[in-house]
Image 1 (cartoon, rainbow, N blue to C red):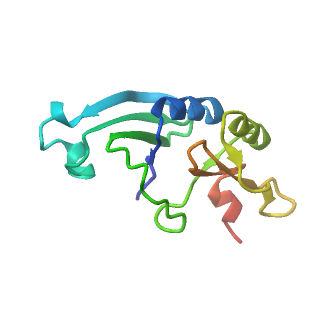
Image 2: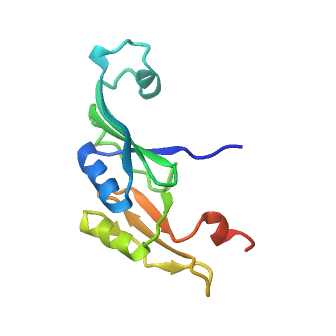
Image 3: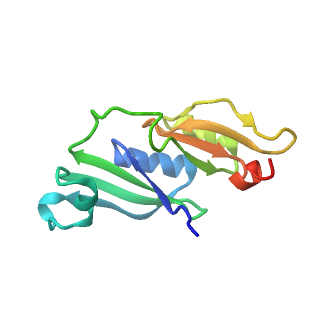
Length: 156
């Protein structure tokens, strides 16, 4: 058995991202924010094992949803990695969350600097199975569902 526990997202401004995910999607801070400075760490630290020796400074925080699935946000400060090219059709493409109020969540996303990327789609005509694609202020695609994936796509 396996289960998704969290998704890691790189953002250019950790405080702004924390604020957005809290206000728009009702995530709460589980742990952090944490500051990482390679100059203060043992060279055998887990962060450098994963990110590589070129990482000098970063910050991260663990946010949690009411469903128990989290988002770990990373602000890479040195180097910033801002010059990397985004590849929208390679690797992880988006995350999907279930929300109680689809329209209200879209409105909060836009109000706080995100955007609605698609129209609202009814996946199964006659059933309350809706989805919409949105973006956070940093361009991460967040799909919003009104029901679980198994309810929407099961027995199709």
